[in-house]
Length: 347
Image (cartoon, rainbow, N blue to C red; front, side, top):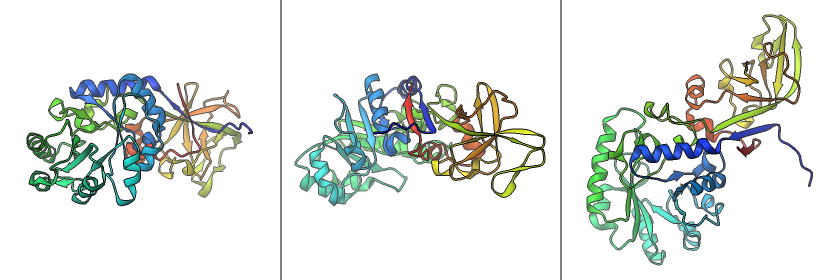
């Protein structure tokens, strides 16, 4: 097989990932799990699981059974749950894999009771988000009788804002905790953890903050950046003053300029909204993004970096909160949108 190097890399900081998980566990006063759905928010679910399991994380969550199957075999001592529950076509996987479904409807409860062979499950109760989960009255009305519930969960809808809804959800979940037996109880996501130990219960389920996202101001200092996109310079060009760069001639050289063209574009998740605001660095030199973002090419003004040459690597400006503010994309989109052409490597 021919070994071909990708012109795109995603440098991933193992120490930052583990640091973020440990800070989240300390901040909540509870055990911290990890949401690794969407392939570990784009970083690579298996690699994330291995690093966090080695650091002591025991509880992991994915969205679908396809994601769960891709993580087999699990590291020793690790628990994995599928947040989207169990559909009719999921039952063979659910009975075969060492994974628990998070049951989220009366229909799923009935399906698991009939075909789950008495195995433990997790249960999601909706406390106000109206997405997945049994309604509170269903959960309290006897629908869960006979189930062996490992983790009883709910999910906060507005914890990243200062919303009265969050307090109402906390009160509703506390009442459910007192009424429905389970081995452990879990409410807080990354933003919920930032609200303090009242939201911790027994187990938290951070996602975004593990990977360098900042869901609330309380996490702005402690949380460290994990993902650093890097692009290789394909070509260096001398652009005379007055000439334009890229589609639509949206950038015109104000003076004789050096331009670096890199292998990256909107096909890789670096979308057109970065134009006019994005940038990169090379050996401490700032390189503003110029012109439009193409499918797989972008250009930078490299006039202030005279030593930059073809084949050198640029590090994209990708601090998640700052990049979200200037691009209009959410921190979640910035992470999960990074495409398959990035070669992911951990340091």
